[in-house]
Structures are given as structure tokens and as C-alpha cells.
Image (tube, rainbow, N blue to C red; front, side, top):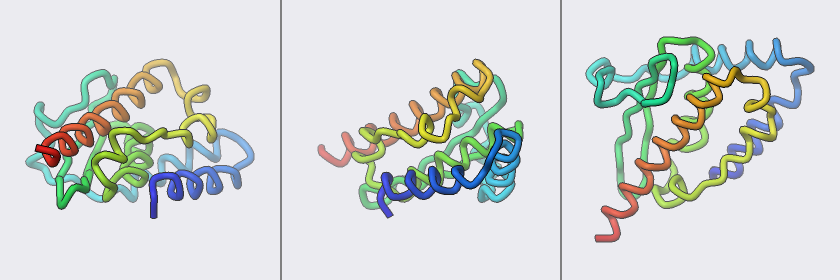
Length: 141
């Protein structure tokens, strides 16, 4: 599936929930189903700066695509990174770098997150896009 197709799938899933308490529950459930990151990547080199809670992100480039694994010590943040991993993992590095993650606004995430969590979400997106850009640039040379 493409990045946009996955985003549309997420927007549709969130449309089934009437209120934000249900949406938070769903985000928490997504975090619980996030595949475990290898313990060796839970170090300072893999921590995303700008997040209030600790978020670890590992990127594995493979034939121009990037597979992401991640974890967080906060349950809602873990759900947020799970959403990003779902959208971007396994995608083309160049597409990751330039993707418009419109689902974040469409499901109302930004206005329903605390300012700290919202800043953390921006930091997570930025880090994943930087990985995409780095792999794309490396593959072009």
C-alpha cells in the first residue's frame, strides 16, 4: 500500500469513534501492538530529541525502502509512533522524505494532544523524514 492509502485507512478507522476518549483508547491499543524494538536500539543514539517522554526509533534501509521499529515509555506516545511506523515503514525513502502526513490533521490529533505531545509528534515525523532523506541522498550517489 502507498503512504496515502495507509493514511486514508487510518482516517476511516478513526471516523468510527464518536469521541476522543475512544480515540485515545484506540491509540493506546495501537501502541500495545507495536512490534518490539530490539533492546540494543534503546540507547541515546536512537532517542528522538524534542519528545517529553522517551521515544526510540531505529531505521533499517533495504533496497531504497526503510523499515522502522520504535518504542516509547509513555502509552499514548507509543501509540502515536505506532501510527507513524504503520504509515511510513516499508516505504520508499524519497517518498518518506517528501510525504504529506495529512492524516494527523484529518483525525484531529494536533488539536487533541497536549502542546508537549504535539511537539513530540512533530519531532517524530521530522526524524523519520530525515532518515528518508539520508537514505535517498545516499542512494543517489
